[in-house]
Image (cartoon, rainbow, N blue to C red):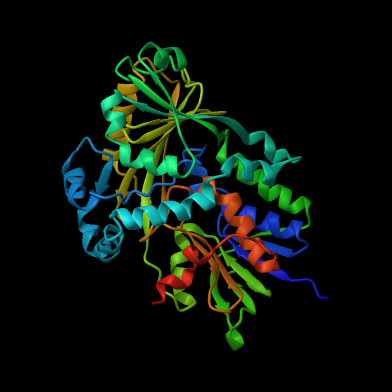
Length: 414
């Protein structure tokens, strides 16, 4: 039997994981990216393997609260107003899911992709150089007080239904656990059995190096089109030439949207502009990753400093950083870590791929042999290895108990 050749577009965490699982199944793999591996959203994420992050942004009440958030300069949501006409169709569909029934449905779908994230990253990297980046840990949510925690009751109830129940620390226990925190932080909701990545960029680069050691190939090339002669993928056309294949996988994050257009399917996918600041040479670090709920950002101790990541901005795919989100992030960091100093600061902005229904696209386009593996919104790093395994199983015909119907890309063809 002739060996299959699969071309994977996108060398972030999802593409790299898909490639490795396919190579382990004996499939010939070529991984493509127009840039260096791991330097898109996989570079700039918060680094947390957030298995409990099963609740989408579109919770009940967002429709009425959203306008107030946008007008509140202290809330970490920004909009470039001139972009609103282009954003409006996607935003309308996005907000239509801000009800209890859809929120529960989406949470169930996300739980399957990310609920065992640490184990999936460990399975992907066990016995390899990349394993050194995977750090098991707790993951804490910091609140000002119990009232603030109880205000999130709906979200915590959904997490509990997914199997995630926190240990609560209050008062002096909070400062004993995390001395870096301001005395104003009066409650920690601590999740066990989570983890984080010590250096996301180094991690993905090591995964791509592992692929090469396994006999796979990485090619730096920009995809221009697809040859679907006879209704099935024959080749991927790139600026470096034509690459023949039996199947292809789109794992290029937000850049997968325009490529889907070349395949005849318009996906309601928006670029959510995310920001981070790395405080290098920090005077102190948290003992484990934290979500600072008052500022809606995460703080992760990494090998190159303290990465504080959060803030949402809608404004298209221009590379220009906005000053207001970074200014607010610095303000929120100073409020919760009042004694933090650093020798240097590094700013970053990148694009999270946000589908209108908050679920990733995982599955085959009709019977074309083209598979999708993108649209993970805030959970790309968390769900990358599981997504890669799911796609590899679909391509190789490996039996699985997973129901992939909630993620089918064809849900947008209706």
